[in-house]
Image 1 (cartoon, helix red, strand yellow):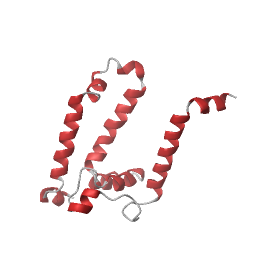
Image 2: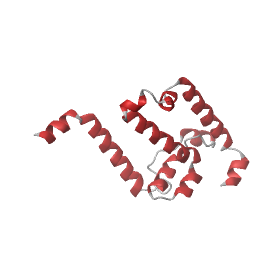
Image 3: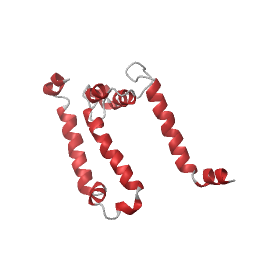
Image 4: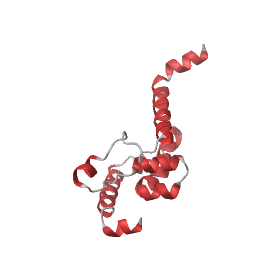
Length: 136
């Protein structure tokens, strides 16, 4: 009885968990650089330029296999952002800590959104330069 009650009360959370488990399994077993059925970047397809998100699927696949340097080569911004995302979700899940945490409040602010937007735009511009391409 208790298990069915838990399932009934947490359907949304269980559904999200199962969705992400399936998604992680797909990216673990299938390499996006070798399979054509993964999504392609529309900006890259139309213009030939890389956006800030180009390489995220391949980087995620490499991270799941603990190949951090290759993941960083595919998309350094994604690899650097992961610890911040994890910290955000940890802070969000601990309700008592979030009310007094200045960092969590900053993460929810418009200023943070503006800073992230500027970083993403600058990274998009930088990754299309010859200097960036010579690094990797």
